[in-house]
Amino acid sequence: MSTVDTAEAQEKELQEVESVVIRFCGDSGDGMQLAGTQFTNVSAVFGNDVSTLPDFPAEIRAPAGSLAGVSGFQLCFSSSEVFTPGDEVDTLVAMNPAALKTNLRDLKRGGTLIVNEDAFDKANLQKAHYGTNPLEDGDALAAYRVHKVPMTRLTRDSVEGLGLTQREADRCKNIFALGLVYWLYDRDATPTEEWLTSKFSKHPSIAEANLRALKAGQNYGFSTESFTVHYEVGPAALPAGRYRKMTGNEALAFGLATAAKLANTELFFGGYPITPASDILHELSKLKHFGVKTFQAEDEIAAITSVIGAAFGGALSVTASSGPGIALKGEGIGLAVMTELPLVIINVQRGGPSTGLPTKTEQSDLFLSYFGRNGDCPLVLLAAQSPADCFDMAQEALRLAVSHMTPVFLLTDGYIANGAEPWPIPNIADLKPIKVAHPTEPNANGDGYLPYLRDENLVRPWAIPGTPGLEHRLGGIE
Image (cartoon, rainbow, N blue to C red):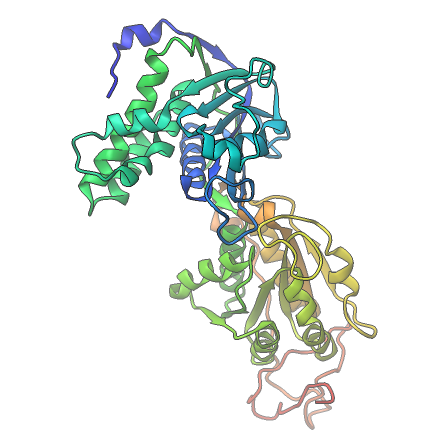
């Protein structure tokens, strides 16, 4: 493993910049999501404003080295407020030829290109449909600042003596790349070192290998003549408070559970797994200690009818899906509108018609969500504007549902669902209670209960089945 004196490292120029967009890209198994997530965490701890954009292949498992199998993670970190993960990339880390070919068009002219030159062999070049090696073509990459790094070889050298197989050693090269980018942007690697130690606490040799690879990447930046400058992005002037990195789906789960507490009512979530909405179910299933009940249905129709039943029983009810699932839920949503039951339908939009592209994003379900049911079937439609905003919109959706006794659609998309940003942890005292009223007395002049009798806001009452004297039926024509 290469080492260097700290004084030598300090001789390299350190430039201050306002914001940077980085993209890590490689095969699905190259650990690009992990590298990007760790860089995001470190930047958030440092105090930068951050916005992320994970990108997954649409194929379940494309061949290694193929164009279809490229996975990426883009993030923008800044000393000022960030609203998007960025359009043009400042620094591109490409682990193989396919990653370079599919992502190079997004790298700005004059941008930094870091490539794993060990992966540019004949077989990988053919898989990426390169006729010649772009690293050896003087014109192909002339518009960029290219750093050809033998990541695979240097990673293997750094973990030598730990008894790892070559395959196990090669799995550390994403951490080598992460260490190099940490040096390039003057990041403190301590949080990642602590995470690696904890993550692999039962496998000390794996933990040590990753720690060595991380340090080797940093040392390469210190010692190589290829890098003559590194950069510093100062902390952002964010409002004072405690922050947590939050994805959109995580924020939805926390927002829904918070709304249930504010309403002093149980939360029921019934859903069928579908990308990119599945994480809402996963996150809510971790919150059972807050009285959250989750139900994984056998299909989308069962999911929507389960939340209709739960809403009829007096629970705050939520389901989530994406375009194909929303199409299947249409008849059930119509029944919820007819029966005027309060529930929330979350549509995490993805790309394409029919089954579409599960891992790609599109914002094309507006008309489907608003008009995609037969008959006169209006409901409330909301949309979140960012991952952190999902926390507030989840509460607002349930608030509107119970105050107006209606289903409410909440739209997000794959970028918001999987993207992350700093979320200011709110003061519980600042959150507005959600008023839920269940009648306990008859409303038909003391003689029975009329479920569709209107109040001054034209809202019907929400009686819990089994309440003495308030027995009633709701339904369609089934």
